[in-house]
Each structure stands twice: as structure tokens, then as C-alpha cells.
Image (cartoon, rainbow, N blue to C red; front, top):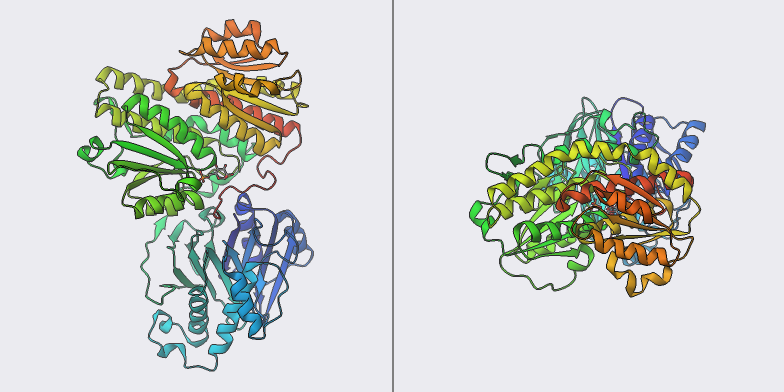
Amino acid sequence: MCGIVGYVGRSEAAPILLDGLRRLEYRGYDSAGVAIVDGDHIETRKCAGRIAELGKLMAAKPPTGTYGISHTRWATHGKPTDQNAHPHFDASGKLALVHNGVIENYQALKDQLILDGDRNFSSETDTEVLAHLIGKLYDASASEAPAASNGNAAATLPNKKGRLVDAVRAALRQVIGTYGIALVHSDIPDFIVGARRGSPLVLGVGKDENFLASDVSAIVAHTRDAVYLNDFDVVAVERDKFEISSVAGEAGNYQLSKVEFTDADIKKGDYPHYMLKEIFEQPGSVRDAMRGRLSPEECTAKLGGLNMTPAQLRDVGRIVLTGCGTALHAGMIGEYLIEQLAQIPTEVEYASEFRHRNTPMTRDTLVFAISQSGETADTLGALRESRRKGYRTLGICNNVASTIARESDGGVYMHAGPEIGVAATKSFTSQVAILTTIGLLLGRMRHLSTSEGTRIIDALEALPAQIEEVLKLSDQIKAIAKKYASVPGMLFFGRQFNFPVALEAALKLKEITYLFAEGHPSAELKHGIIALVRPDLPSVFIAPDDAVFSKNVNNIEQVRARKGPVIAITSGKGAKHLAKIADDIVTIPNVPDYVSPILTVIPLQLLAYHLAVELGRDVDKPRNLAKSVTVE
Ligand code: G6P
């Protein structure tokens, strides 16, 4: 949801900024731009379209300079045009700004600027208004007392720098909304200012060079030393130093962290797409989600990051799982898991709904916010609302030091490694694996016996090898995708643990093939959906050899009777049975029902992937989507 990169150092900024943007392209790809300060003027290149287009512009006329800012956009205010592309300038043309977020009161701010005589706006964006406001405050401060006399944190910066930081603060105090920003001013050499509220911003600390970025993946090729900025932080960045203060003007605290992955982890390697790479990483990512968290001796799970004593865990009377998109689907499986393994009433809430409604909560309710990025605005909003009301709120996140991870009372990291493909894959299976360990832990504190605990641990530990088996079916699934390449859409059905998998499979198909897809509990077929069944619309049944297999078979027969093609994902004895009635079957290892979603989802990720490739879609950057949705 927009990505920003800033650089100040001794190298040419252009290649560093462009490379950083390419790594952030998953955050948005409607338009892109850079502003690099060359002596006393700012060189700008920006255009609608992908970063590749910006690359062409920059190659045709390379901007030179050793500090600058850049942006890749996911449009919110204003269409994705050249004019609306960031960076945006103030009225003087000397200040350039990039922004990730939404300035909600931009119209009121713009009206005031216009009233004050500033009519020089060239875009429809909220960002340009902020650039004008900062520029106006900076220019006005030239005639006021020097910054060194005002006693705030900017006092340590020499005059122009201090004045610019003061102007940023003063402007941001007028802003309602969210922002991660970076800006340069052509009068102030080797100086970048950044600030955040609601949108992520990280400072990369290098040797004689420093960076700003929405996500460390943009800068990890240059440094693994990072400071994850907090909301309301303002950072003044120079080549060899930085200073963090708050929007209110107080000196800021910060912690230097080591980025846990390397540049090699975010390369595509030999895979044609990140999505395929990430699907194939699942044996390792699921193993990493469980690493050190299973205790075969005590037949339970160990989750120290929850920051809860055994007594507190035993007192949990109700659980709410919240998230968006794929994370929500993982939460829906979590509901089945926790209720079956621990018998604790569990509910799943769309984060976007939960945060705005008055859900009845009991004092013993524990809330989990599930989010790969740890930055999704609605999930973060749900977490904050839940904490505001006094409920213990834990995170299940992949991005270490993300906002959700930092603001929660504890949680469990996925350790899945960077997920770059916009369609989530490995994060889903990691989330489900973690929710299983939570169910195991809570269950073992209640009624689960040691032998039941051991059975669950054995099932979890067997998963990585079983995922390898499923991945071997990729070519078979590719052939199925080819066979159905001209269908208008697909229906997905599953029961119990595999009903949310049907939803997730439909989401994957929609996201990357743009075909219509719906997921439903198999039995709901009869209640309306059956009207959609027709010879050119396949139904995909997730029907492993489990307690509800025969019920799924009934539903498959109902589709067959109406000449609907059927693709079945099955296991064990199901294969023989379904070979007679389904058009295509994919047979995966037979496992206990509570771990089956981790296996059943993989053929469906592959089906969506191969179909999207067959249709010539841009798999890693599907239209209109962004991986990390930091706006509401
Ligand atoms: C976006 C992505 C989805 C993702 C969802 C939640 O919509 O396109 O793939 O599932 O956000 O993301 P999160 O980072 O919170 O898991």
C-alpha cells in the first residue's frame, strides 16, 4: 500500500532508490517516482505504471545526486496518472515529499492554503497538500527566531535543518490521518526528514550512509541494522547520523535491531514467480513455525512469546480471532482447531467489522490479531480497539517488529521469511500451524490427555515431509489448470476444517486469475448455489478421507447429476471412490482432520497459480491489489 525509500550517503542515489522500489513493488504498482537532489535543484522522474516504466525514464535521462526519495503508489486519492505520481512538491518547488497513507483532512487543509493565497496545486492528491503545508511553514519560519532557541529536540540541528524538522512537526500536528513520509529540500544538502503515523517506516543505518524505507526488504542489500520507527516519530537523517524526536517535539527513544533475513532470502532464485517460490517453501516455513515450540516430553506446545503464565492461560474463557483476507481464513480454521482441541468458545471476526462494532466480550476473553505483514490497517485498528477496552491482545505476525507485533501484549512469530507474492501462501499455512500449537497448548491445560497431545505433535511433525509429497503434484495440477483454462469461474466446497480452505481457494483464484470464484460449506450447495451449477463451471470439492467424507460425496453426486464438472482434492480411501465420480482428482497424504487444511490448501494454491500463468496474468502483482493494506 505505497512504498517509500529514501537515501543519503556517498553513492549515486538513483540505482539504490530504484532497486529499493522494485523490492517494495508488492506494496503498490499504480505509478512510481524519484526525486534526487543534484546541487541546488531537484531532479524528478515519475510516471504512471510499473517501476519498470520509471526505470526506462531514469535510464533515458539518469538523475545524479547522492540523496533523494522515491515512491511506488497504490492509488487512494486521485487516479494513477503521471501527475498524481509521487514525489509531490511544495509551492516553492524546492521541497519534494513522498507519502504512504491517507491525509483525511486534506481538503480542509487545502482550502486554508488556498485562502492564504496558495493556488499552485498540480495534482489531485492529499500528499501534495502536505508538501505545500510543510513548505509554507518552513518558508515562514525563515523570518522567525532560529530553531536553536525554541528548546525542543530539533534544537541540536543547525538552523535550516532544525527549521525544516520543526515545519514537518507543525504540519503533522494539523494532520488527521495516516502517514509514512520522506522529504528533501534543495536548500539543505545531504538531509532527509521522515515521519510516521499508522504507516510503517524503518531507518536503515549504514556506514557513511543511511536509508528510510516502508519495509526493510528495500534496504537489506545495504544494511541489516535497522530502527523501526514508532508512531509520531520524526527522524532527521544525514549521512553519518540521525536524530529521532516526536511530532510533539520531545527527544525520541529508539532501539537498533538486526534484520533477521538477508538479501538472498528475497531473491526469486530459479522460480518464475515469487508466489511459486513461496508455495514451494512451505515444508520449511511450516517447520519454522513449529521450531522449538513442540515439547514431546510434556506432550504440549511451548509458546513463551504469549507472555502469559499457565494460570492466566487456564483462565482464558473465550477467544476472538481477527484478521483480513487470508489471515481471516486461517483464523476460521483456528476457530475449529481451538474449539476441538481446547473446547474454548472461539469466534472469528473480520477486523474491519470488529473494530467498529460493540462485540460482546467477557473479562476472560483473549484476542488474537492475525497478520502476515503486521501492518494491515483494519487488523491494527481491531488490536488497538481491543486493547483500549482492556482485553489481552496477542499478535500472530510474520514481520518481526511490525506495528501489530510491537503493539500487542505478546504473540507468536511465524518465522516464514519474507513473503513477496501479493497472494498470501506460505503465511497461511504458518498461521494454521501456529493456531494448532495454540489449540494444543490450551487443550493440554484442560482436558487433552498425554496420548492425545502426542498424537497432535506427531501429526504436526510429519507435515513438512507430507507437504513435499503434495508439491510433487504440481505438474498434475498444471495439467488440470490447462484443461480448465477457459472456464468462466469455479466453485469451491469443503466441510469442517476444510470449509475455510474453500474460502481461501476461492480468494486465491479471484486474486490472481480474476475469475469469479465462491467458497461454501459443501452442504450449502443445496441452498441456492446449486442454481449456478452448469457444464462449463467446475466445482472443486475438498474431500479428504475424514469423518465427513461420505457427506461430501453426496454433494459431489448432486453436482454430477446436474452435469457440473468436479475436481476433487482427496486422500486415503477417498481416491478410489472419487475416481469413479469426479472428473479429476488430486490425491494427497491422509492425515488427521485438524492438520488437513495445511495439506489440502496447497493443491489449490497451485491450481490458482497454474491457471493464472495459463491465462497470462501478472501472478506476483495482480491488478488493483496490494500486499500490505495500510489504509481502511
Ligand atoms: C491484503 C492481501 C492479502 C492478505 C490481507 C491481509 O488484502 O492482498 O493477501 O491476506 O491483505 O494481510 P496481512 O498482512 O494482515 O496478513
